[in-house]
Image (cartoon, rainbow, N blue to C red; front, side, top):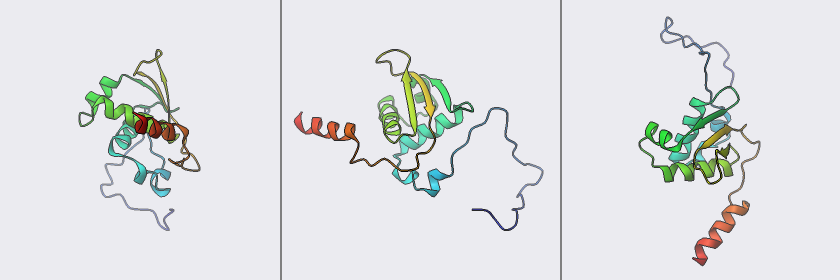
Length: 133
């Protein structure tokens, strides 16, 4: 929301400058209520990948390195968070080799419409498989 008059810095001689390597979060995560649908590990992974991404949203990280950077989360939680971010169309992932947990990440533009968890075929199939086993 634009302000009528500019804000005065709290510490004028300490103004943040955007460095050559930069990261950003789309304000629509808040204004369109995306963050209320995040589990803590999803938000942590999204924030981490945003911080390490290049200007195109790309980064390459091994899961064990991400886990060391965020010791509150274990690799199975991060895999689940990654899968959810992919399902929500916020992240793309390409493993380095078939079945490899490590690979290339790409942060995607915030979709104009949130995907419905009930309409996602993979979610429905996963629920069916859980009840069968």
